[in-house]
Image 1 (cartoon, helix red, strand yellow):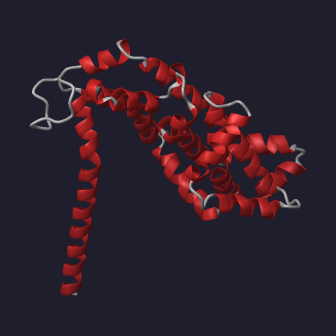
Image 2 (cartoon, rainbow, N blue to C red; image 1 turned 90 degrees about the vertical axis):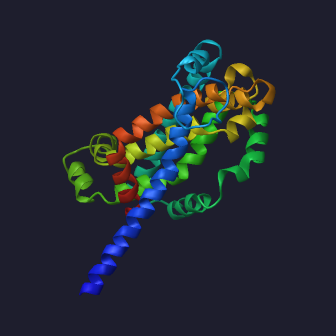
Image 3 (cartoon, rainbow, N blue to C red; image 1 turned 120 degrees about the vertical axis):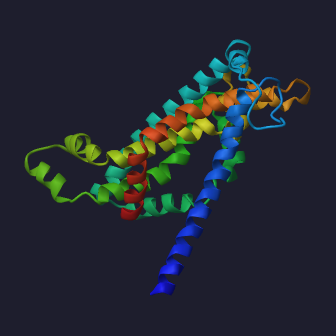
Length: 279
């Protein structure tokens, strides 16, 4: 018994040390960027992590001397449009696959499952050619359509799994009371799938918010740049690099996402675990 207790304490200590190491390795880069954005000068390298004096001049430069607000608006517009369109299509598709039995249903479900195996960057050349043919290169709409198409397979599977977990007696009772499919969908199914709905909405918002690869491929005009593109261009020229201003921009990009995840973490955990297990 003593040996078992000693082993248990040793295991717990090892787990705590491992978690502590993971936490430090995760938080250190974040702390470094935040403190660098408050440091004078234009380099991220300094003798100590804590700056000698705190300055907000880089944030002032970011908003007054660069088109950062335009980049922010472009990114916000793309992210909101992607989230709205993808969530609408996902919940409609998931409800159809969950509540109806029709010819080709299993084929479409299997196809969406297989599509999740391949990383999106494998299709970049095809996406570029397709957008070129339909005249959607260098447009925010083209990016929204691509982001939405990538989000639909995983989101539909997750939401379908969540809807499958709702007892069938619930919509059947509503049908007996004379409720239409729209009423069942809008007033019964959607409120009962709130955690999954919030998780899907948030992930479909953050994907275009943080993306660089597709934006670099599609967008070319200066007035259509997103945050990722604009901040990259800010530091790509070694002769005119403002790395501390870049750090300030990175902090401003991360703040809304961090706040959303902190505020909605309960729904996020419930949405991904319950939806995945039921799928």
